[in-house]
Structures are given as C-alpha cells and as structure tokens.
Image (cartoon, rainbow, N blue to C red; front, side):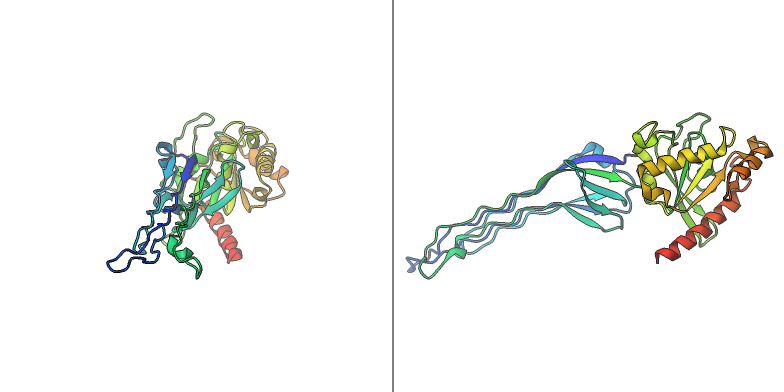
Length: 330
C-alpha cells in the first residue's frame, strides 16, 4: 500500500532534576554539597532510510514519546541521558508543523536527519550553587521539559521524469513497457490511484527513474479528481512528459488543460523542461498528427505502447534532455 501523508505526535523526554546532596563521611561533619546534575531527556529524531518508499509505517503508529533523563545523585554523580528515538522515513519526506503548515525540514538524502522534538536539558545539582558566602546551598534545578508537537509528513517522490496526462492517456501502459514496473492497467479513467516508479534503462550504464502520476482533469489543482493529492509528486522531477491521447479531443486543448493545472498548483512546475508525447498511435489516423503539427509550434513524439512504435526514440530524447539538465545542475 502506498501512503504519502501522515500526521504524527512527538514528545521528547524531560531532563532529570539535579540532586541536593552533601558529603557525609566519618570525621567530616560538615562536608560540602555534592549533588550531581540530571541527565538529558531523549529526543525524537527523523532519519532518512533509503530502503523505505512509503509512509505506511505511520498508519499503525502515530505517537512517539521519549523517556526522561535520570535524576542526579549524590557524590557528584550525574544521571544518565535518556536514549533518543530514531524514526525512519523515506527519501523525499517533507516535515511540516501541523498547526500552521510551516515547512521545518526537507529530508532527501540517505542519512539526512531532523530533530523533531528536542529532549530537555538536565537540571543542575546543588554543587553548582556554592559561593564564598553560601557554602551549603540547598538550591537545585528541575530538568527542562522536552519539546512536544504535532507534525505532518508528506512524501514527494524522487524521479527524473514525471508522466503527466489526463485519465486514460496511456501513462501506466508506457511505464510498464519501458521499465520493470507493473502498475494496474485498464481501459477506464482513474485506473491509477497511486504514483508508480520505474527504472528505465538505455544501456548497461545509462538509466533514469520515471514516475507515473494519476490522471489530471480540469480543476485538479483545487482537488478535483485525485487533484492535489498527487500533484506534489512531480515537484521534484527534473523534467515532465506531457502524454496526450489525440482520440480524446483536440491535442492543443488537452495540453492547455494540463499546463494550466500545473501552473495553478505551482509556478515552478510550468518552468520545468518537457516533452510532448502523442500516445496510442496504433488507434488514430495520420490526420491526427497533421492536425497536431498545425497547432503546435514545437516538436512532439508519436508513440504506441501497444506495438512499441516510437518508444526507443522517446527514451533517447528523454536521456539527452536529462543529460543537459544534469550538466546545468553541476
């Protein structure tokens, strides 16, 4: 099951209190203060685990509470620090404050960490309060309270290419033909209910990651269809492939709808490099291509995932485009 949204509660441990203690030994009737410090409370730390690909674990556990630090003891012995709780998350997890939606961290690379709730500092024992005029202090500190908050976790897929198109435009079929991914495929709208990733290999040393996003309809940026639930998954892609089925309606109209929805969701999406791909070539006549050529001022690729027409050309054009994008990123 693919889960890309979760709400969790995290509470760090309280620091241990400092001790109020005095040295008591034979023949030393008035020993000085020797109260130790309290230990630090445990923190809640989010860490990227490259082996995770979904937030499904948070469906079964939403509360994470760390232990308190140990109290200080006599003989200047400090209490033990509580152990931190490490919570594993997949690459591409965005951490937000639940109360106001503020982005706190963007965890992308394996090993990236974020302290979701910091443990409280331990209190000082009475040994810290000695002064020349105050030789027997009975003051000590209570440990600090650990942080407590509610967080929203959102997963944004990490892919090189995002397939964008209206429902039933052939995105899942294309992904299944050029990669080992096996998304659900059927001849009706909204077959794809979750994003799918596939690795597309050009040759032994060249490959890229392609993401199949559920179909977009007019008003998707407002939540219509599957809308904003999945639009965020193409925010991290390096480029976009607009997949258009000419048999559905005018090609230019379909492209305008797709671009409009992306722009309404985020101005950054419409700036990404892209390719225009006319799908299901085995089902339409040449006049569809001619009409598309008249309406477009830019090039497009014609493919048929059913009989393989144009798939090799598409893969190479994507690869060449990605090479240019990567060079610009360096």
